[in-house]
Image (cartoon, rainbow, N blue to C red):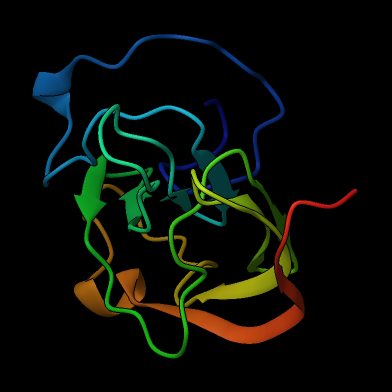
Amino acid sequence: GAGSGGGCGGSSSHVLRSVPASMVGGTPPAARNGHSATLVGCWLAVLGGWRGSGPLSASDLHLLHVPSLTWHAPTAEGRAPGPCNMHTADAIHGDVWVFRGGDGCDYYNQLFVLRVRGAGDRSSRGGGGRTASTASAGAQRHGGGGGSGG
């Protein structure tokens, strides 16, 4: 947007538009529903969802570097949330807080914090390096296990 200099932030205007696949680099995540997509700095973190087959949800994490429109497959450290769909995820101070609702077979009451390194990256269209796309999953875990209670 105007005044953003090709980086992230700085512009208060919002325009909804479709981005042609030909403009996006890297390998995008497979089609899915019930996933989360959370903006953290210059990165869009896409987590989990259901791909339309199998009993369990997806457990993968994908990062889109927004200024360069390039998908990255991050490396994860620690314990990842595991299969999740119908979960929630919000960015708080550069971290993605994930409340894991279920995996397709069971319901959960678990909270995870994903730390996306390089979330404050303000690089221009050059794209930010692979190190900026590294994520640390499961740095903190709170809450109980499975069970179908209310």
